[in-house]
Image (tube, rainbow, N blue to C red; front, top):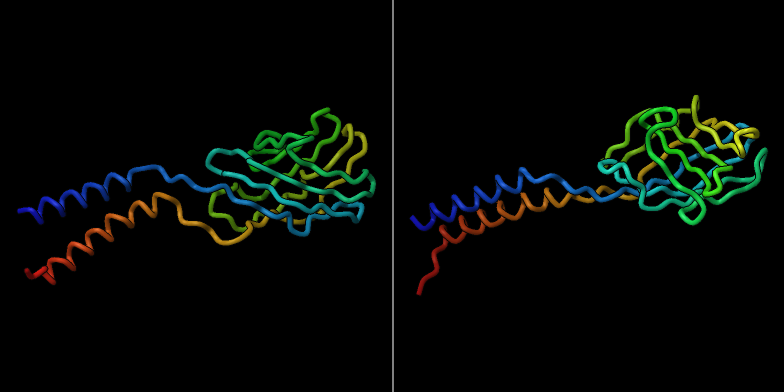
Length: 175
């Protein structure tokens, strides 16, 4: 009877944790091979959580060409997701509103990571949006391996408990 009750509790806990929403960790993406029409490039990183649609940090450098070189960061710019050229879009705007860097992507972002190619039809950088340069290629690529979500770990704990109970039943403690 005691074993049945314990097994029921373990099963109940497993089912309850399975229903909890997963809390994914924001993913850091590298700009990979991002080039402009004037032959210059952009490098840097964006840390983004696709579930909340929020960026916790970014640092992007663009090289001098048609526009002057610029370092985009939280200290001088805002990063906004969505709007612009569609739902798969990041727009960075300087705090004075003069310089804009718009990224559009071919696929929606997920917390699975991977690589997301830039949609070159609607990606550009501009100054007062009079002088601008279009992006001719590149992608955002996730850095490192994916980390298991807490919900996955929560599902593993009751399973390990059940296995431990089973092992104890097979090998009873002798006094």
